[in-house]
Image (cartoon, rainbow, N blue to C red; front, side, top):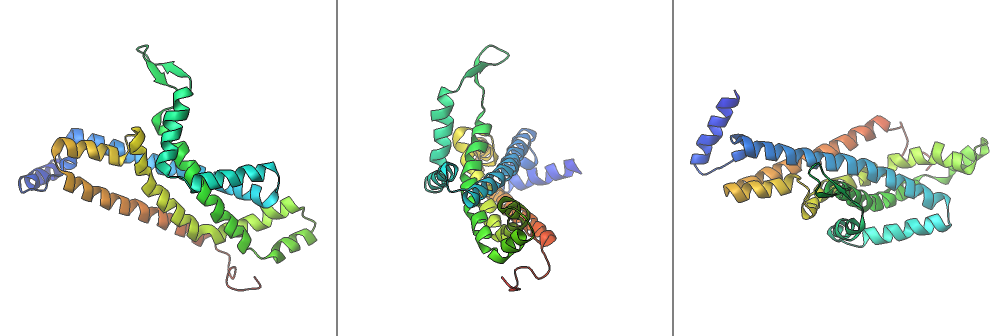
Length: 252
C-alpha cells in the first residue's frame, strides 16, 4: 500500500506536481517533525494562554491594587506590540543574558531552547487577548447571580469562583475560539527564532526540491484543517457545558 502511494506520487512528479513529502523518506520525516512541533506549539501555548487569561481576568475583577495595575500593563504591552518583536525580545534580549550550559560534546548550549521561548511568547501574547475575552464574559453575567450567591452566604471570592466564573466561561467560548484560531496561525512566527515547525521545514523542503507551489498548497490545507479542528473542539466543549435556558434572555 505504501509502495503504491510512493509510486503514484513519483509518477505525479514527472507530470510537474512534485510532492516529495509523499515519496521521499527524508522529506517525509522532516515534514512530520515540523507538523508535530506545530501541534505541540498550539497545544501547549493554547493551554497556557487560557490559564494566563483566566488568572489575569480574575485579578482584574477581584482586585484594584498593584496586581491589577501589573495585569493592565501586561495587557497593554502585549496587545499593542507585534508578536514577532516580542519573540525576538525574549529570544535575543532575554535569552542572551540567560546562563549557558554545555552539551555532551562540551559545547555551549542555551538552557532555554528556541521552542521554549516560542511557547512563552505565544502564551503571553494570546493570554493578553484571552484576558479581555474572559473579562467580557464576566461582564455579561448579570449581577443577580452574584447577589443570589451572596444572599446564600457565599463570600465575594467564593461567589466569583463558584458562580460568576463558570457562567462567564460559557459566554466566552465564541471569542475564545477566535483567539485560539489566531494563535494557531501565529505559530508560524516561531520560524523567526529557528523553531523547526511546519513553515520552517516546508521552507527547507521547497528550497531543496524546488516545489514551492506544491508545499504552499499543502501548508494551506493543513492550516485550514488545524483551524477547523480548533473551532470544532471549542464548539463541542461549549455544547457539553451549555446550560438549558442560560443565555436566552431568562432574567439576564
